[in-house]
Length: 116
Image (cartoon, rainbow, N blue to C red; front, side):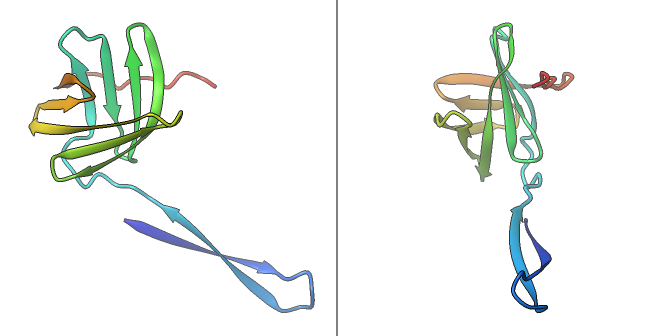
């Protein structure tokens, strides 16, 4: 879903108002895969947020990586905030093959965002 936000601003030259256009993309869950996904040894944990963002935990490092993701059909593309990219495939409703790993859906409390 794309939401367009229009902002009115007054021009510094004259009394004519100008219209500035700011565009904000609002991602919504248009797929059934949002939630927590973990490897069988629980070393890697991905939380796919409904906003199109994800949080990845590695071992004891909660929030080790963050980024955005897009799902198209059963394919997922991820771009982490440091520039790393990875893709994967949801092979069924509870199994994700991603970045050389196999992650499985878990019904657990979401990963907490550490304070910045």
